Image (spheres, rainbow, N blue to C red):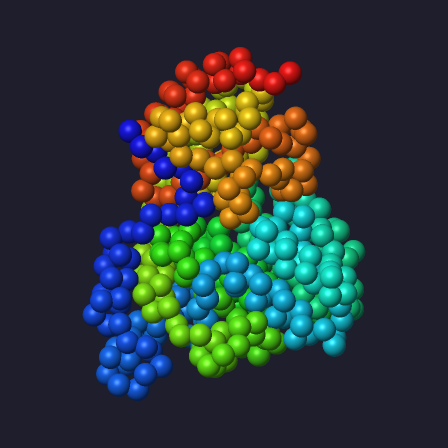
Length: 384
């Protein structure tokens, strides 16, 4: 049996997405900027994808821009908005648990002279609102908070944060990294006071190298990719029509079946947490039910190195992650777990299981069966 539990790293492209991607590559292969019919046909895919996404988010079609994925989107949101608004101030607020595609642009801003504030989180990974309130000043120009943490599945109070920061200063740009949230929950940027939203395609069964941004009308953002002026000059470069077609279809598929998919993933998550909790020396870092994201389980296995467990499970056809797969292929100490106050001896012994709607209960059962056999053996080889 194979059990792929690394869906927060990437997902399989579904049949409906594959079909439209192949058609866009082999039949309607024109440049969407070309004025002839083949170009016009290609442009229709871009238009349809925008319409699908705008309908899901309840925003205007003209507020959707396509990117190469989450990293580009987060860089543009952070660097582009900070540079566009630096005359109004130089303070930027984020958290200690952001993905590297947010954390590293923040380090870049620090080198450029911006005052970057990193908010702490509680032991469940939830941002401290009281610290946010203390750190909001008249010089604050950008607040960037992830919607769902990619390692432990903590759901941040993005709506509450948006309401508060706009009550203090309506001109502050509010960016939300929704890469682990889109397709797993309803997102309403206007209701939540979000100015910029970033999404990656390969987390929702679209091809790698696809993504989109919602940028609220009149939000000041400087483009970071300059060229032919495509997408109203916001993101130059010939549009990746197959990828855009794919993410448009994938988004529609996710939200056409959202309630059913979320219920199924939550059931698998809760089942895994219940079973793992029965093992001695296992600490669960994620929350059950709808308190946490439906698809992520972080667990620490005392006296078992994360990469050792990963490869032991891999030998049995079970695929998990030893951390955020986007950082590198070498596990590093998790800043998220450190910020949550996880016992230091567990930092190198933590793995992530992440589901999609295609996973089955039998796969969870199989994983638990294998863990029952291998954990006692692996613990014999712990370094003293």
